[in-house]
Every structure is written in structure tokens, then in C-alpha cells.
Length: 147
Image (cartoon, rainbow, N blue to C red):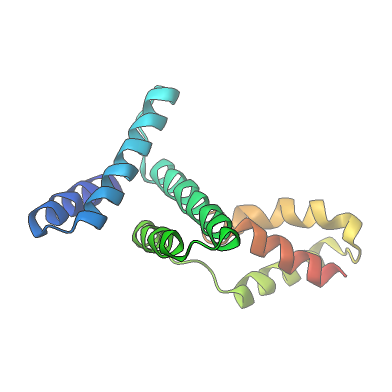
């Protein structure tokens, strides 16, 4: 079962069970996927759908930070719950230690030792961790290793 079919099946299940929060989040995801397909004039595969899901999670994380600064705990909880539902459809993220191990290998292969070479390291590292690690975490790891 591909990701689109799983989302549709889970939407039907949420509707049958009366789970309004899950239903609303899944409808929002399906609408976002449809919007990207209409804008790009192509049907998304699982990788494309995962990109849309990652973008949705990132939007939720930014909203959580904004709501926390504004002192709005109810909205923070709602956004966290939505983010958790969306993340359940994404593959597990790599642990920081595994990213660090790959980064160390690439740094050794390139023979670099200063922050000026960060672009080279990131260019070689990102294809290995695309979709499996947050770019911000990867950036922190590489910066930490090169300093």
C-alpha cells in the first residue's frame, strides 16, 4: 500500500471512528498534496508526498515556537498533536550519532578541518541523509565537527 492509499484509508477510518482531530489533519494533508499536484501539474509519488508532509511538520514546528513566545499553551498543544499525526506517516529520523558518524567519514575523505569547508561537507553529506534527518541537525553536527 503506497502512502496516498494509506492516508485515504486512515482518513476513512478516522471518519468511521469519529476521531475529528485525526480526520481534520488528514484532510488538510490531502488538500496540501492536491494543491502541490495542481500547482506542479504532476501526480506525486511517495517521495513527493513525504516532502509535502515534511513541509507541513516544519510549518507546525514554526507555529509551536510562535505560540510559545505568545504564551498560548492551548494552540501549542493542538499544533503538537497535529505534528505528531503528520510525523507518523514519515520514516524514522536518523539519530544524531549516526549523522555524526557519516559526517566524520566524509570529513576524513575530504581531508578538511575548518568551517570554510562546510559547504563541501554538506554537499556530500546531504544526499546520504535526505529525508532521514533534519537539515538543521545535520548543519549543527557538521559545524560542531569542523570547529
